[in-house]
Length: 425
Image (cartoon, rainbow, N blue to C red; front, side):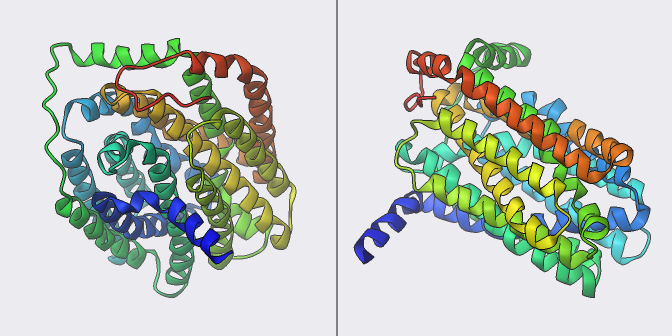
């Protein structure tokens, strides 16, 4: 039994054998704790300043709309330029953004328009950071077969941070206020900057591009649209991200008005979702092969929607916690399995552009979804809004699963130049 557990642990952590990925994992893990602290603190600050669900949606919109508009061009940049340099620049400027926000709050001169402006700036940086980061994984590992494991472990770091960050943020908000949360987040960026500097990565082969940016962009879009399996995965992600994922911006309302708590309750809810997501990431990391992802994506989308339906209908904290964990598990497995499928099916020459489309579908759709969620919550209530999102997610998963046999045949018959090995849908 002990030998089996040890072998399982080695399998889950196999990407960490690569020095560069170990550095990335550690630096990113620390930085992500600060990121989650800032997310909770920013939502709490906006709600404290305005008391408006709609303004929560506006800030969510401002922080994500640049990703929708700029991600395609960021994907071209990630395929043309050194991805490590892109990340160093975006991380440095994100640190400045956090420290400026901290200064505004600590000096007592903060206004909601300033929060919106700084959220927009961070959104611009994320638009370039995320495609570069996602397409950078392949250069951090020693064995291309470990790509799916690296993506899952990165998701694990993201969700460990989700467990720690909201709890720390809730405690700090209650004791010293939001400003110190933003300041501490600014300091955590040093860990990622140090990791990038310490990596030993051979210079990338120079890419000679005679085609224009728009033509490069069209190549990536054409690949995704003409490949039914890729198109279906992106559409499923986009549907969930618009109607269901924005439930997160309504968490302050659930914590205070639905469940009758405060900042501590908000931290508990975010932690519950993080526990489920972490379990999903570890589940994926333990998988040995990047095959059979299609049924997994469909089932995970169903679990996500079902968890949201139950959470939206619940008015009791002890019921809401496990339902949020289920939703977190489903969302993480759906998004990480989709990420793995897309990266495996696309070669390195297209990886940045395909990951920019994934970024648009998963994150770029959130600003519109945030506006929708804020508007709907003001109109029909936060609970009904979340239930409707869950129903749509369940329906989208059913459509995806019905089309799955044809999508699997299509994926099995395709071969993309430069791909490590096509994943079976």
